[in-house]
Length: 405
Image (cartoon, rainbow, N blue to C red; front, side, top):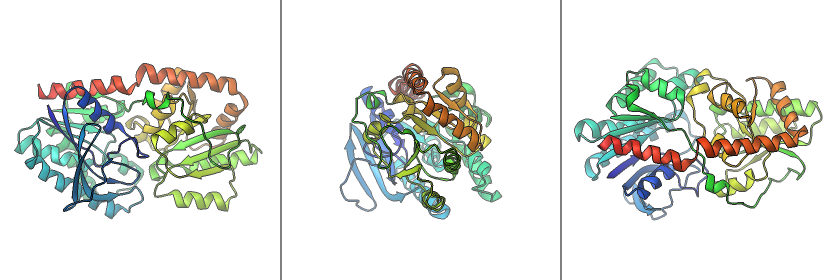
């Protein structure tokens, strides 16, 4: 079958962001299907094509995937109005492809929620099968965070969410809470499949060259956060823990924050003003480079703001990268990931908004390296048994093939 795949923030492994869509598209190709990926230009992402844009668009092929990239630059550092404008422009241009491209099925993945718009048009105006993948619940998350308060905007987003779910022949949720959220809008559970983010086992099992950022000594206990520095991430919690560790004179524990985002400058400024030399900031790195960093990491930091909507309604890439690399995880909010850490003894689930509990866990990790090694082995075992990307991507392709049949 020919799949028209919409993901505004698509990237190959050469970029420094998640590669779920790349891996899913590659599995479709391996299984004999043709894929046309439609995306924008995402900060930190790499589509793999470099020819000039012509009339705001360029085409190419990478790894057997045909790519259509719009000249619509986007960054997590953009303000709300600019981000919303980019989302709408992408959706409008995507509608044009719905009527001009040849395909058997439309697949669209969030974020943003506007990704569902071309699928709605394909379903009702071209009578094509439509599968909608939900990575975050909108508008529930931005509303819970207080990012969007305008009732008209929230109402429009709620309608678009409902229309996308009800237009789709099938839906995919990336976490148990997302599946429940889709079902709560009237979609039968028989039309919803749970396909969480997966672990790229081959990337993290390739024996990469270990490295540590400048400022981290070989015998330091290094805890790493690798992801976006935005409002949702709540990274002030890491700096709060750093303050607590300084008060305990634990200069042997280093906290490394890798990535970019809207709040990075403020975090850097705070660390500098408070003399937090135990916090090291680093630019984003590619998956291959990340594998080398993970090879010398002692603890992976899975950090989010303490918002109840996050507890069961997210499926963060970084968590799966950590366990794929055999790295124990420190998680600072309740939910399905915290439950897994406890059940499989592969990390630390600490209470939210508690610098003391956060610092206690880091001290435990630093003072019992043998236990840390065992936790890492348990993490890798969990990755292999339940989150192998190859197994999950085959489930993904089966679900899409069923929509056409």
